[in-house]
Amino acid sequence: MGINSKHIEEEAKAFDKRIGERIERGFVPDLRRTVQCDYFYKSFWRDPLFVRLYLGWIMDGLLSALKTHCGPKLSILDVGCGAGYMSLELARHGHNVEAIDISPGCIKTARETLADNPYKKGFGSLKYAVMPFHEAKGRYDVVMFCVSMHHMSKIDEVVKKAHGLLHPNGHLLFYEPCHERFRKQDAAQVALIRGILSLTGHWHDPTEVTPSMSNERALLRYVDEVHREYILERDKNEPEGQSPHDLEVSGQEILNAAKKRFVQIETRKGCSFTYRLLGGIRGSEEEIRNLAEFITAYERLAVSHGYISENMFYFVGKKK
Image (cartoon, rainbow, N blue to C red; front, top):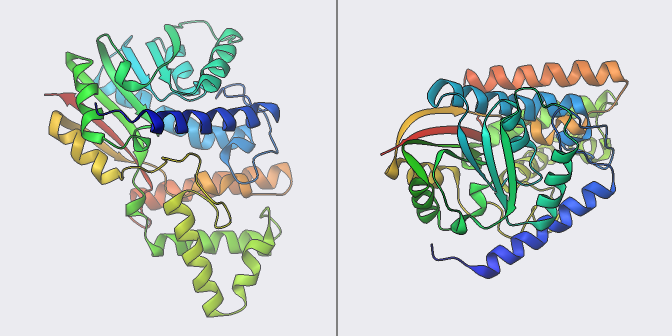
């Protein structure tokens, strides 16, 4: 597959560091058992409600795609599983999952979380392994990527490898970023929402937003900052993203590669902006719940009707 070992080492080191910092601060990588974690200042991982509204919704989409197009009790390879929370949920729904990641720290955390899993009724099976994708072997009903494929530079080879790991009627399933679809008009809507939250005392850092309201030029600069933030997946003062090789390929490049070897069964729009907004909401418990639920409902409506662009997308393809 033309593997770059330095690339893999750099990614593994970054994700080891990231998961270590999160675990030290109380992070629980389990969609059903996550806890309030103030370490996250703007991420959906800050509150179980945000996790349900964001990751729970993504998981529902993946499960729906599997049920509709692939069937029950599937053998699934989850590539780039991270701390394993999506793999765990798939197994809880009766699937037989093998999950791999290049980060030893993430796999250690995933195994520890699995060992404490109290939800065993209807559980399929789940195994975690530290392994780069090019070393994967076996045959599966589904090869799945959930926000991991965009870290892999040689995307045609990645898709070819996935194709080779599937049974004759197997499926490729992924949920990946498509930041190239996110426009300045979309960033302006995010700036408006954050501005209103700041003015009403419901944003984590009003000083991030309120100076931008002084005049039109300042507000335009803030819209540009928000646009860059979502395109690059990092704040303006962050020197780099979550890893050295984040966003190696675009959503369109991933889609083009997938369609060469798979018959496109379904594509579906994902989220737009809530993953970098929900965690920034502040206020009383009731205010946070009401605001988060309303903003999430608006995002889903706006994306589905084309009022705002999606930033992520689902793909289901059948092996040619």
